[in-house]
Image (cartoon, rainbow, N blue to C red; front, side, top):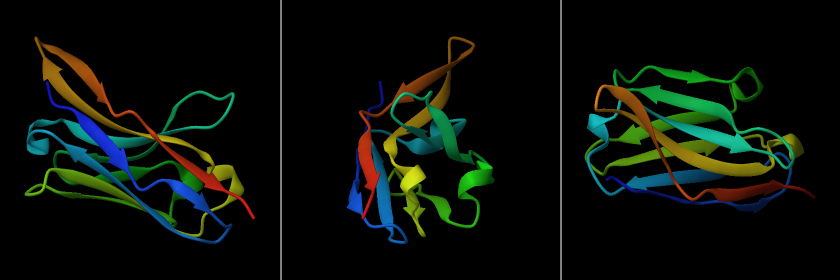
Length: 119
């Protein structure tokens, strides 16, 4: 099974930027889509940005215009560029991939990386 490993989290001041990366141990072109989820303390995990197999991207309204998801198929990586960060962006961010497995959609998750936006 393919494994996902995130990196790039940390502490940043409001208005700052971070770039998260997700490295897959196998080909990402096999996945139906890849996404970044955020889970703030005491809240449910929420999809923040997604890039479909076609390359089409979508974002939750709260990050539109600030976050950009991209992929490098040759390097088997997906990134999330986070600009103009706000304290409410503080969360653990998880890389996710969805694939067909035995006729059903299956999820693969990374271990998560902490992003803290604070002055």
